Image (cartoon, rainbow, N blue to C red):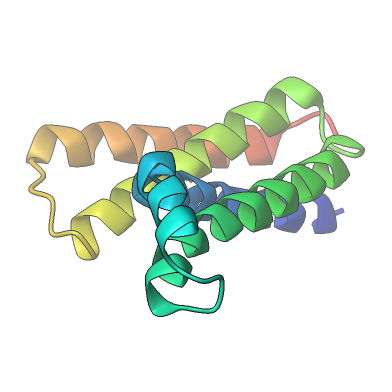
Length: 125
């Protein structure tokens, strides 16, 4: 019965990718690149890539999440998915973007991790 939990964690990874593709997506620049550059150009590709990531990560996220929902209670799955996504986004921010963090944030994120473990251990599935 671990397979749905694996799908849930994979969905969280895709959610993290979807979140960061939103960070880089800019429809105004995409529209300008579409009007000013051919489809097969570096300039157009740099603006189009975040949109492709948005679509790919979004579809993959929803697929994996829907598979997990079939075997895990919906409220539990949604809580764990949201919490895992939040932790992954924060870790990516801290280690990749070098966003400063403090002890209070680490403490509260660890409480989220404890909650995830508790939900996984005591879920009625």
